Length: 129
View: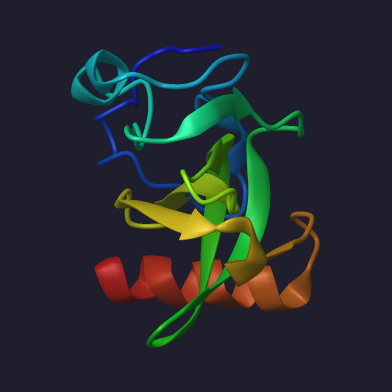
């Protein structure tokens, strides 16, 4: 469940092996989890942090500022700010192995047969190689 990220391939994935990515689930991550590479992020200064119950790892299309990117969600948490706003936050792994943090509202949940997701993964892997 919370095995460290595999560095043999830079932590990335392709359309055939994304499901091997280790998920961080069942609890809220602490800084120690990020430092040990078990989690992508740890948030502080929030009220009522909790894990979001969703299947992980989960292919997603992330609507980043510079366009859509294929990713795999490996961490999902809900955090409430002091003013009562609930943020649903995901830890994502991009095809090149980079970890990023995104709001659930900024991704589309897909499955690994989605042609757009597969095309984005193929383009990212091709660019990296």
